[in-house]
Image (cartoon, rainbow, N blue to C red; front, side, top):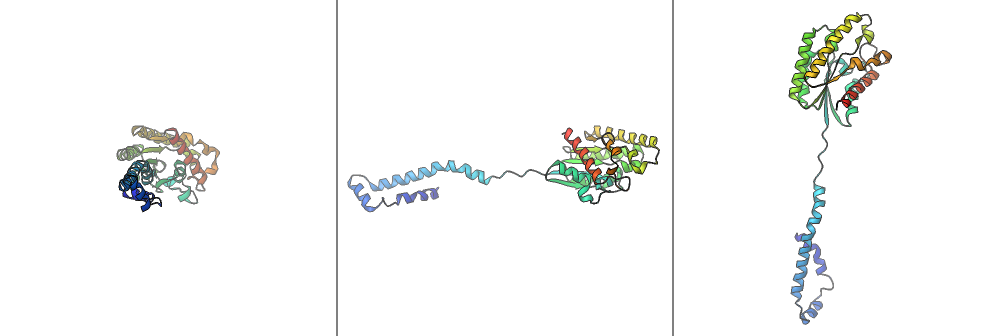
Amino acid sequence: MHEQCIQHLPVVRSNQCSVGYFSRLSKAGFDPLLYLCLLLLTCYLTACVSLPAKQPAKTQAGVQQAPKARLTYVAIGASDTFGIGTDDPQTQSWPVVLAGKLAPDVRLINLGIPGIEAHGALTTELPVAIDAHPDLVTVWLAVNDLADNVSPSSYAHDLDQLLGRLRAAVPHARIAVANVPDLTLLPRFRGADTQALHAKISTYNAIIASTVGRYHAILVDLYQQWRSLADHPDYISSDGFHPNAFGYAALAELFFETLQKTS
């Protein structure tokens, strides 16, 4: 406040405020000291009145808007989540592609471990996923269990444990779970018993749908939505089993469309 008054003092110390000027005022019956006090008082009041008008500008400059929180996305899965089949899993796996579609600045934690089954993910991937406090979790754990002949009852128990613990630990996170696509469309299974394979896929997918509903998760129905595999053999890598970069890009789009429809 004193600094404001000092800024006005040059007006009082202008050339007009000489000793001769005050002498003439004194002879005219005007008290120059009173005049000077009045000027100082005016300066003081002007500074005080002007403060509220300048204060908002200081407040606006001092208060910064909090940065928007990053979306944390955790991908739980096996080799197809890791990105096996691409030239560069770090940039071409479907979780990486999906993360790029979700937001400009997504914190992605890809926990995909080649060869893992649902039971193994309970102790290796799930704790890390929970510790990350994710906003979004995708789970694609079924193909290895099915191919390794894990009993449906054991798979159902493991998936229930995984989604149950995940939902309890991060109740506000969105959880999207993919089912088993039509494996008969893959070169790897061309010599398999198609009828028996379809029966196993149907059993597993029924378990997934039931568990997803129980924990209010989102079902990504690859069995119905990824029929384009039949028309796109170019989506599959040279091993005849895993998608390549083109296939993972299409897979990421299916996840993204499902998330958009259920948002």
